[in-house]
Image (cartoon, rainbow over all chains, first blue to last red; front, top):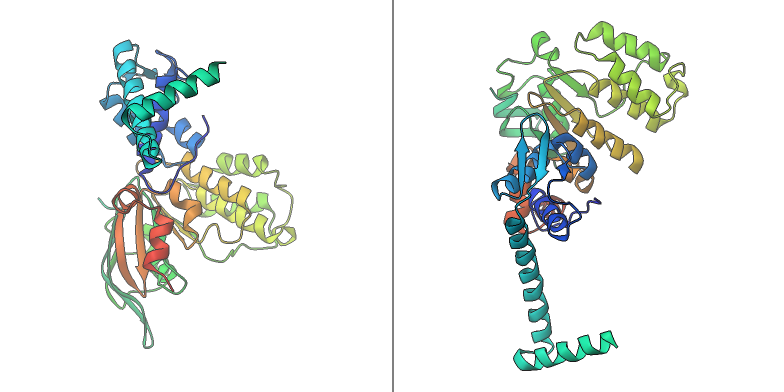
Length: 123
Length: 231
């Protein structure tokens, strides 16, 4: 995973978001092993406390689980993964709808535009 | 117990007030950025922690003790300017550090030197300025100390060496030990910091976890710094 951080948000929160994204997209498969805190810290170039905090947060949200002595793994609970995928999709849809509204596309107009756009894309 | 505590710490040089009633606590396992413009008191604070200066008023404690022989065992210090005996070779220097510091991990130091292709037989005076700085940092970070005080560790080195320094700090991380990095090049160190301390004209302007600063202000620590210290 390549790590880049933007200015505005806590670094641990950005790490949580990136890992969630990887879980939702399947880049991190259910049951996949996550790097250890120190490895993750080195990979992302962040402080180990920050990496630890990100993993703890994902654990709290039930997206990863720890097995004593062998490490942390991505949840195999398809329901939980679906929920994250949905959350991310909602957030993206929200952003898209807001941006389109600024251009004057709302409600039925937006729907018609989308249908038309998808049809053209498929041709 | 806090690794470093300052209470009402004050230091004057003639009529110049270098530190003015500074209160700081550094807990174990934290990487702390001591951030401030030139002349804000960063180096004075670090020198006081090393017992190179004595407080005018207030106190500074390392692991509950006043700076002295006891605390020098626990504190690994990277001065602002490289001050290595330049007639020595890198290998000789490792022997020197092993003799002086019981906590010096010679294998770790040799490992990093060879990874950076720094010749053990090369004399320090024949090294470039950047290489000298790297060698000194490697020596400092290869001690298993309780407190690392790094005064401007990234000032004179190239970006690749900067990454090495940060990697060394991360991989050296130990929940018992703390690292204080003084710098004005914040963007480069921001990602590795737990806490930030902003210092200006000898006074603490802000002391908080780095992630809290970013979250509350919606800006990077670097951007907040530029705002607070706008010229």
